[in-house]
Image 1 (cartoon, one colour):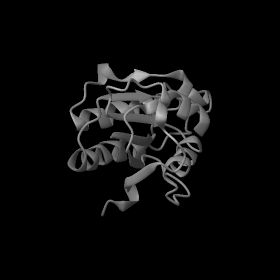
Image 2 (tube, helix red, strand yellow; image 1 turned 180 degrees about the vertical axis):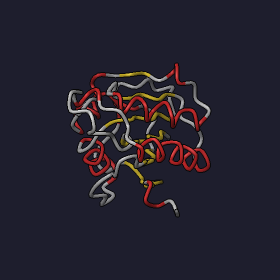
Image 3 (cartoon, rainbow, N blue to C red; image 1 turned 120 degrees about the horizontal axis):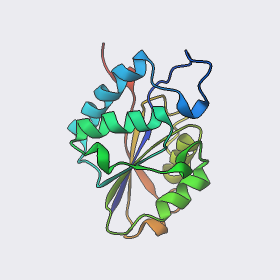
Image 4 (spheres, helix red, strand yellow; image 1 turned 90 degrees about the vertical axis):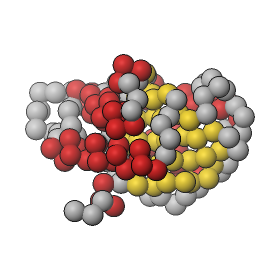
Length: 165
């Protein structure tokens, strides 16, 4: 059995026109939502054995905040350039390369790739993973390389607007 947790980065800021897309930080809503979503995830799921994030500032910041809520060391987060604006097939290539000893892995990245990946793997009818949205999918496989379309079971789809104010 394998578990894949997918996290779309928290809401980012467009307030600094001189920054590249890669450099954009979280805005105030993103700074508020990331720890709240991390706490919600920690209450529902065991922490992943590995967290891999897009190296974009908004994604890596989200990964670090959520990792903290899960009791996962920020220094252990792997920044992987292949996740920056990756399409679902690129994400699948990354996932299929995970070591079989890893039972639970978290990816932190971007749309539309993450939403398309969920649809491909779990056929869950999720039209859009909102910013700081979290999806958890289980697979009845022994090796990540054996991932196939429609083989996943959606366990969780949560996002900040599900949190009562």
